[in-house]
Amino acid sequence: MSTLLDQLAETKAYIQSKVNAQATIGIILGSGLGNLANVIKTEMAIPYSEIPHFPVSTVQGHTGKLILGELSGKKVWVMSGRFHFYEGYSAQQVAYPVRVMHMLGVKTLLLSNAAGGVNTNFKVGDLMVINDHISMFTVNPLLGKNEDALGTRFPDMSEPYSKAIINQVKSIAGKNNIPLQEGVYVGVTGPTFETRAEYKMIHILGGDAVGMSTVQETIAAVHCGMKVFAISVITDLGIREEDNVITHEEVLQAANEAEPKLTLLFSELVKEVE
Image (cartoon, rainbow, N blue to C red; front, side):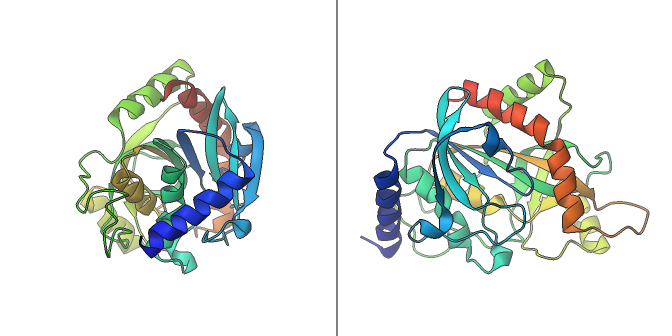
């Protein structure tokens, strides 16, 4: 058995020694979006620092706990805080928790993030359902020897984000009068925010929003056979006329203001997904 599969087995065994429960839905909460964890009826919360082979969150707004709890009457695994390539972790380390969720039985992965708006029709605070992504500016987490026990060598990425789940979310949003945008997410390494020229390039390439997460997690999830849904909170605008400067504090503030709508969407979605 390979080192990666050995590590995954050790991580799984440790988590199950703390709580041996089944949950087929996994949720990863992004910058400033950790308050959903407060809605979840927590059964067990394990700090990342205690989990074998797990990275540790280093970014403000990411609390760093793996939670097993109940949301809308269903068991869910929740990562309160994620890992990023820009923190110095490898693409494989960023993807590691997704593979752990797979080992724990997760079939559907729900992702959220904070992103910069590139589409000129977007405004700060918008929610954008991700219907596709561009991953060419990030390192692919599947580089290296393929683990056939996790997935095929060449996974199909023609539908990285489940169309069926996207339609479910649109229906939920309509019933609750929550406006939604929809578009293509461009993944970049960070940690610098994009230059004006880079925003223009991303716009020309067909990107609607840009961010420093999600893509590597999605690739790993699709490789494992999961269904994926992802949504961005538009926390700043890259295509703009004025010379304002983007700060991480402003990103967190915008994410926090959008959080109640996101919490409602996720809570209602969990009721419907398998």
